Image (cartoon, rainbow, N blue to C red):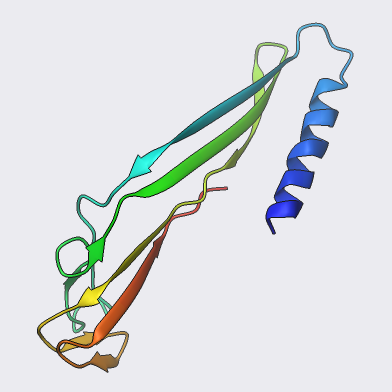
Length: 121
């Protein structure tokens, strides 16, 4: 999948920069850094599942993130952009109580792994 995204961005770059318009402008915006959960509580099903704090109940370490946005300004009125911003955070640990999540029961002190994913495209 990563190769197809690079191919898409390369084709987009070629298409956007090959225009003969003098007022058009190509833009690239990149951002990267470290992210860590400040507050992330989950429960499934919403009213009967066990409330789990990914930050407090399971351990999560800081993760690297990046974001890429490319854009093309046409006639100072229209901006076409494409965004690629994947974000995945991983947690693991054990909880000292029984956990009901997604109609599955996890016994107290059993190993639990969780993945939080918030991708933007």
